[in-house]
Image (tube, rainbow, N blue to C red; front, side, top):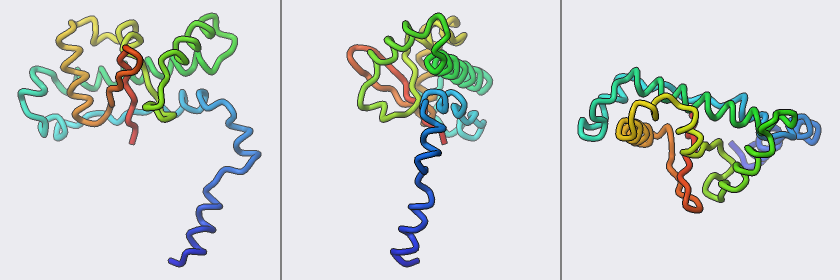
Length: 155
């Protein structure tokens, strides 16, 4: 294709001013579009036994759904100005935000500890579960200002 055709296509893909005003709250958009692909048995078997340990496919997919739910609830609270935890969550979110998050959806490890069931099964199990999810490129660990956060790598 010619260069002019590509330019025209890129102009059509850009949001217009009226479209950008409709989606002025980026966090509200994020809470609606947070989806993580479930782990397949083929993906799990592609990881070495030393890395995955005794983690089962069901445990990984439960952890993914817990992480997804934690992120959705966090971004829903941040986007809702009328929620009672709004200012507390917003200040915690802004304090932990860094350049490596690049505008993507992320969650702190403390949020995962507070709201995810797989951390209640034990620290070692939770760590290995997060390690497998990082290996499968569902999460990316970011160390920011002395805190650990996880960026969701959606497809």
